[in-house]
Image (tube, rainbow, N blue to C red; front, side, top):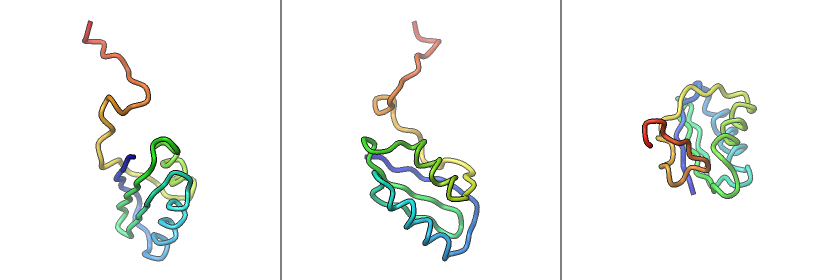
Length: 88
């Protein structure tokens, strides 16, 4: 399982509730919470969806994302690892 914190554009409390319901209803999403101040928290099943799919769904709902607040997953949890060019 994974969880991500994002910062998005601010919105009204009513729209934040609707966005929480919409994204929370996606396959693989365990919980989604949007707040009017632009904070977004999503808990999801990594086997059912990806962070990129979540971000696209949020943006397709008309929300402009500003930045990711939570760190990326540790290397052992990433699907594809890039080789470090400094390590031989």
